[in-house]
Length: 89
Image (cartoon, rainbow, N blue to C red; front, side, top):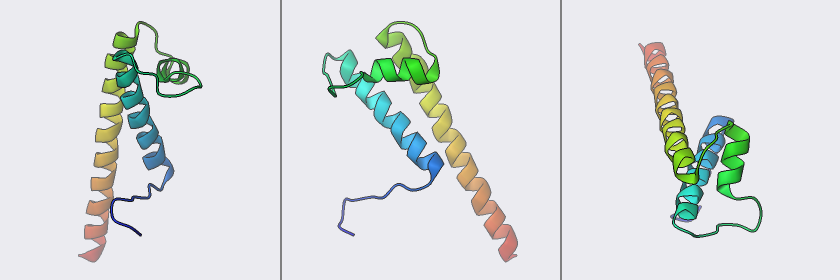
């Protein structure tokens, strides 16, 4: 594998990466940039997460959702590490 390339595997990691990508795209939309020809990140986030409000309001709430998802993923990975260490003892 070449340097600078990464493979994201696992359902939770892929979902988290998609959430981070949508958050970044919404940030660009807030600055006036369009990121795709299809539905906007704003429309996708509102539909999939049931959020309502302006782009900036949705961005703030979705940013909190993504942050919580990151922390939950980190905690889950830490639990796995602890379990593995416990088996080695």
